[in-house]
Image (cartoon, rainbow, N blue to C red; front, side):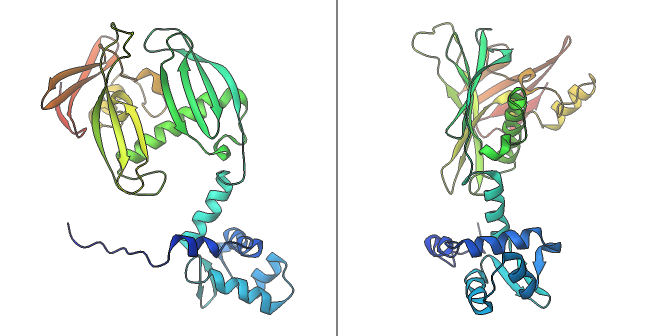
Length: 289
């Protein structure tokens, strides 16, 4: 691998220190709402409401070359500035919320009992009432749920989880944009559950920040062209269908074909037809049947 074109120019503490005044945050928000995210000095000062030109120029200078850039037509919001505003709008730093356990329509894929959704401390957990299996455990900023009623939360969670897996499959961490290379791991059954199968899972660990998410293989491979085509031939749009239809965590939908080297078969069904993808430990598809 060649030399990286990226280097750290400013220490993180110094970069965030530039945002330690409400006037500077207001500048970023004003540029965000301006046409083409660009505004003149006077337009910005009016929008932020600072009468003293010298004081405003001081605060603006603390943002230049990192969060905003000066151009011929005025000041333009840089990508770093957009990310700050985006984080504020997501509610990650400013909002809070919780949801008491609510029953899900979908049954537990392991035992068939009722599953519940619970949201607290910015994490959604979907688990089974009976066998205590956790099917979903993912961090979601409060702003994701803003504007939705309680009944919509399972659907919003599902779409957010689908997006997280798609992004991870593309090789990008949702937390820090770092590089991700997936691998397949085997989750062993609980000690008191001898009748449960070993479950192959896709794991996505960021090389930069170490953030880790995992997914069942049915969801992880849902965007594979052969899977999309298979369901399209059966008048099913995988983009619109519920993820629970494709979850692969039992002996019928996943099968360990070889332990060394690791090879796992993942089965998709539609009517009486079956499509099987065989993957290796790097989640690369080896064969399609």
